[in-house]
Image (cartoon, rainbow, N blue to C red; front, side):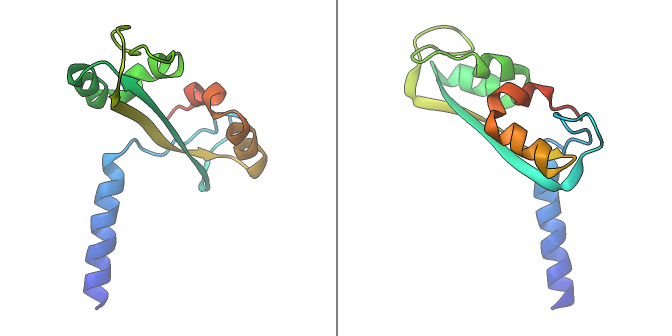
Length: 118
């Protein structure tokens, strides 16, 4: 049973490493981030086509500014009319130095997400 649990946690850790690594600096205070104090950020927008979806999927962080500036009905990548059936989601887990910094971020996540660094 012990070996099964170790294998399971190793498998879960492998999936976690595929996502963006947890930031080490708090985006609010600039102090070292505590990995035990986190928030999940997510923003979904419609794009115009599967080609834009594939471009976003290949490098989501590169399109974060486009996603944040997206206007309803317009693809944030091509600026063409978006198709509500085709969406992309920018998501990441963010770590903070303290609970107050987390609360500040959670109150206005779109305002602070670009400050997240490794």
